[in-house]
Image (cartoon, rainbow, N blue to C red; front, top):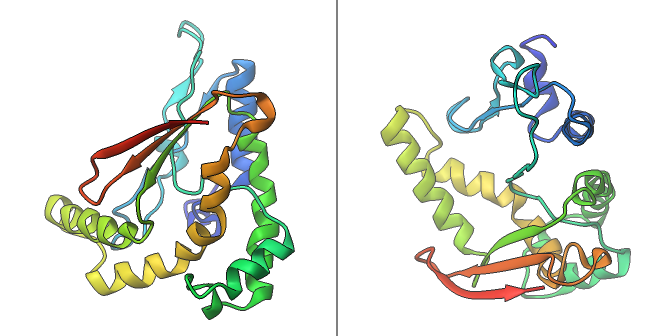
Length: 205
């Protein structure tokens, strides 16, 4: 993979995800992808594959547990009627987006099931108010600018969060209801955070 390929592939590469999860499950030697959030003034990008650590090499103990963390993890596609109902709700920002665009993203999300279905357990870090993500990301970028000298400005952060916030409005209810219900009870732990990031409630699903 050439270095220039990274921007074209972006953050979410489901072919790579499928290959990674399959290799780890089978105990094969595999490179672990890495991501640098400070790249491109805070827009972020994948680190060159030449810098990815290698696991399950001869002589290494095989990986037994994989902790996979990230935004969008656990989101599952919903049906068209749900999308329309949420778009028409006055309590969301979804009215700002075309229905066909929301449907397009929803269909692409079905590809993520290859990861979600592989989970044995799921920990959901939730928020009392999903709007906190704007303030939390502003704080994160301010810390990044201080630490590394680069990061998004406050206005860039707001535009950036505007791009993915609709996904919270579409899919958070489904995550709260339970991502792994088909595998039985007690598979999911939901940690509900207040604005100060302190845990206010713990819910088993």
